[in-house]
Amino acid sequence: MRQSKRVEKIKDIPTEQTYLFDYQEILKKVSQAKQTDFWNLLSLSSGITSLLIFYQEYENLEGVNLKQQKQSLIGLISHYINQIAEKSSLFDGLAGVGFAINYISNNGKYYQKLLEQIDNRLRQNIERDLVNYKNEEYANPNELMMYVSGNAGVARYLMERESSEDWRIVEMILEVFYKALEQGWRVQPKYQFLESEKQYYLKGNINFGLAHGLLGPTTIMSLYQQRYPQNTRNAEKLQETYHFIKRYAQLRDEGLRWAIRYDLFRKEGSFILRNGWCYGENGIYNTLFLMGKVLSNQEICETAQKVIPSIIKDDYEKMGSPTFCHGFAGKANFFLLQYQRTKESIFLVKAEEEIDKILIVYNSENMFGFKDIEDNIDNTGERLTYWDNFGLLSGTVGVLLVLMEYCNIVNAGKIAEWNKIFLLT
Image 1 (tube, rainbow, N blue to C red):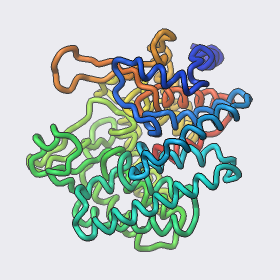
Image 2 (cartoon, rainbow, N blue to C red):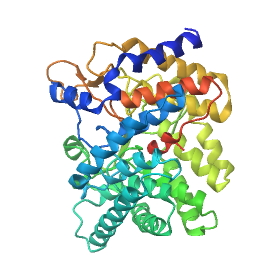
Image 3 (cartoon, rainbow, N blue to C red):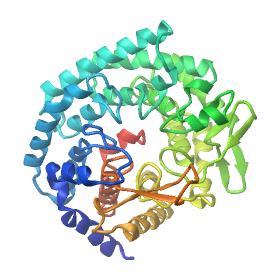
Image 4 (cartoon, rainbow, N blue to C red):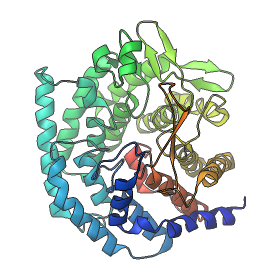
């Protein structure tokens, strides 16, 4: 397919999916959905908050004015914000709402009173949780580390706010990561994310994912080093983490690979069947790339480059969903980002292969245009489940952001700032 034709098809999608420009229509659709995997009204990952980022990028792409839609949505968020006052996470709590509002604030010109309220409550929540953690009263220390639902994601948001108070909280969060490194990044049996993990990994595991594993905290450490390059302690912790990650690499003909988890009982790794954003070599590469860059370490940069052949060949995937988290959109976005970094045409070609897969599964008659397609991990009933998901992580908004980013890049644009949400920049 020619680039011009691909761009035309992409730009047709939002004009067909008119519900995107009226949040009340979205709420109506969600209430009618029979198979919605995730839905939380103010969640950045699954709810309507992600619309703010979509509106900003659609304005940038098409030159339209969506100020009314933004303000209407901000009003709804302000009305319900107290309902998530105890939730801190980037993907399901206050940090995510803060990120989205800050994203459309015109470099801090608008919505500062609301953002300050969010930041103050976030700081209170995190300080409370970290005090409990030190006193060993916190129910799940692994929850503090995870990116999607823990403090790694909160730290990423606070880094965008740039106040001294926010950086103080980030440094408190880093201490949790340093302790995890000292303990070998081990996820204890009772604190594993899924029930199936608790049953299988009897002595716990080491999780090499970006969403739930050690790559999220490691990237936060790298971003902190980027901001404070003279911090030798953090630099040493990054070096230690690099050697830890490298220890579990496996060399195959096409390059380096990692298991998604290392079983501490069986002393073996569990390899993935798909290479998305949440798990896989994409996350390994981005983590090592950023680490090597901020440390100016040639060895780490070279190790990162050895991962690329595995990502390009990718002969072990079983992927059918168009979504960002574990589907075509996440892969396409990785290749777009790598194309921007290197200008090597192979990465644009690979991105277009994934984008064409997305366009094939688009159906204007679907509730949200795209469906999230999941393997049935319980092996009961049908092999695949088709979800009507709206949001950023596993739904239509995340897919559209990648498609719009492609349109921008082929017109000599830059990688969008929303990539920060996914720890890619």
